[in-house]
Image 1 (cartoon, rainbow, N blue to C red):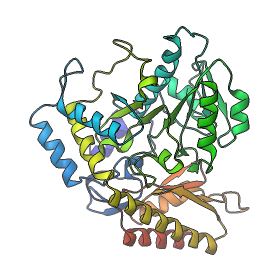
Image 2 (cartoon, one colour):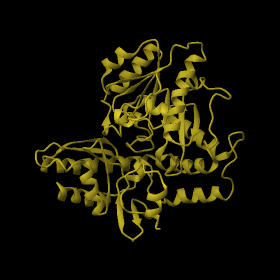
Image 3 (cartoon, rainbow, N blue to C red):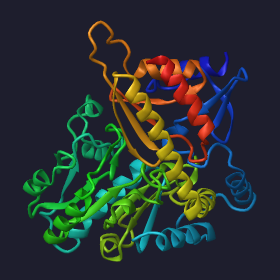
Image 4 (cartoon, helix red, strand yellow):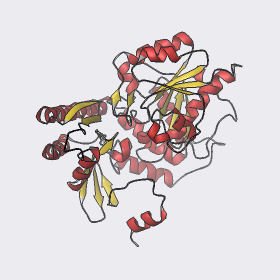
Length: 398
């Protein structure tokens, strides 16, 4: 058996995989087992923000693997301490909790919000308001928090205590906020929901409402963080800090890690023994993440992300002018969505999946979501020539 046959035979069939196996990557390119080169506009679903096998990340992993990989959180390690200090220095936060994934980081945020009030004796304040079309993970709590029914199908009953309201609708949020709500949880830009940015003043209004009611504000920056949107964290574009923030995906450029950041006040919800993670913040993962943080937080690097993101959106908008099937182009930095019309009489087979497949055949990896949106989340090291080549392929397909 080859590796594709082994995967299909022995691995749970929960992913609809493309029919190729990748064996090597470099920068914004991937190479399959037959030697074909692909330009990557997916980055492992917004994970490899510094591209594949970035030399500095590789060196950091190699150095750490030779010295110390794991000891548990019953002891101190330098990489974890240094990463926590760097994240606090570069953010609103005072404390960091490390986990293994984005779902775990969001679980920690949900638990922290509930325990923050219950540890003060307010056991009736436990509800979490999240947004319709949101995506927060696939554990039972994060699935309950997610505002997409299709993802919840087959897993009922879900956890109680979650309320969903329309994104960018401050009146709906205000109507749902009462003395039983512990936190409002949202993505500054909904990624899986269709690449939908918050309106310019929406986050500030949410922040003011949370301040007024004493409610905690959680930003899920698992997809939007780590330079993806042109600033280290997307909420910085809106000049609105949360009380709690979650990170994962690109934090260690492919090494599994998650992080929950919080203000000192919000962090008081956890004390000794209230939460934990065996593998959270291992020396190996935190050593890689520290190198990532140092590279991505550089102002010149972030300026380049903004420049390339603007260039990609400009080129896609030019396609929109040429092709009526393209309905919208939106996003921030290098998180960009292009909505296509899938309801054209006599031509309804050309949905997002059609364009993903055709681009893959031509050597470009893109992503389709919600059946009608092409999502572009390339490594932040993508260049304009690679963007031009993708746009030419898209142009030929419409």
